[in-house]
Amino acid sequence: MMNRAYHVPEGAANLQANELELKEKKIYVINELFKRYGYQPVQTPTFEYYDLFSDIEGTIDVDKMIKLIDHEGKILVLRPDATIPIARIAAQNNGNQSYYKFSYTTKVFRMNESFQSPQSREFTQAGVEFFGRKGLEADLEVITLAVQSLEKTGFEQITLDMGQAKFFKEFMNHIDIPGQASIEIQKLIENKNFFELEQKLEQLNMESRFKDIILTFPTLYGQPEKVFAKAENLLVNKQMELELDKLKHLYKMLSELGYQKYVSIDLGLINHLNYYTGIIFQGYVQGYGKPVVVGGRYDHLSRQFGRDLPATGFGIYIDALLDAQRSFQKAPDHGTDFLILHHEEHLKDGMGIANQLREQGFVVETDLIRQESYEENLKEMKVKNIHYIVVLQEDQLVIVQQGQEKKVYQDLDSLKRDVLRK
Image (tube, rainbow, N blue to C red):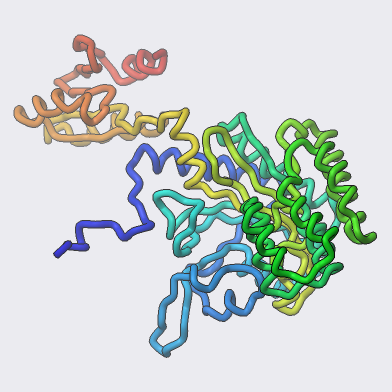
């Protein structure tokens, strides 16, 4: 029988020092960028009532939620989504502001989340939510911020697939397909499953021209001008034309800012349509086939908390960024700059030297000199990635560097000057 105490649960993972340091650096860079755009950090509870998510239409599949039972028998869930509780914050805010800009870095918990590996049930997400602005300028801001976040974390080859949820919605409203059939069609279009899509349409009583239009949706991706030209032949009402014009205008704005090199259009990007109400997008980086950024406009979410606020935002899958970067960049080596060795009677001097070096930004450890431990320290310099061993001997500092002879210094200042030059 397996002893579970020795194993991490499926869908969770430990992080060692090197990877954790890289992850924390990425989070820091992203959060600094969010701050410069005026987004204020918020934090929501790790667990919430099940009703918060189950009662919100078109968001998280209830089967993907990790559920708990509290002492009163109420069903709780570990946070399966960051946007919904932040929408509650915006709706319940008593201020007189016309708009709210929130940022977050948080853990999200879901069952069988295909985006993440190996952390498929527990993963870190960072993002922004912009409430109170319904113009394209707000969409432009969050999209450029998403691209800049990827650039700042070290990625150069970025692809942003941009779509328009309402374009497809207006078409489906026009032809009036039953609800369940509409959901199945959406999934088949999203997965570009032409064979099953054609079979599904054969089962429906629908004009052949509408079937032809639906079969065209999975092909509406690629170079923007070509997709726009193709989409114009599918218009069946004024509403579709208006939504397509919004997407064209946004692409023009992005082009003026120099982001056209990143953008492709995908009008088949229509999943979670009950959640999104306008511009939607997914971001990809080199060598990684899954989206690392997901976002878009969701104008009706806060209404379910008693206040109608248009909104747009995105989430970055931090663990996916780490997975993607492993293919072309090694994690930084986590090591110790100095190990200070001293006799017990020189404790104050040893600690004083260590603290001075720490104030200079170095990573410093200390230990007492014992004959056997000193020899072990020398052997473990490479294993533990110790750059320098400094031994306090009377009025001298003897320094040992990896692969080099011992060097003697008369004082700490001369040692620091020599080390800092390197």
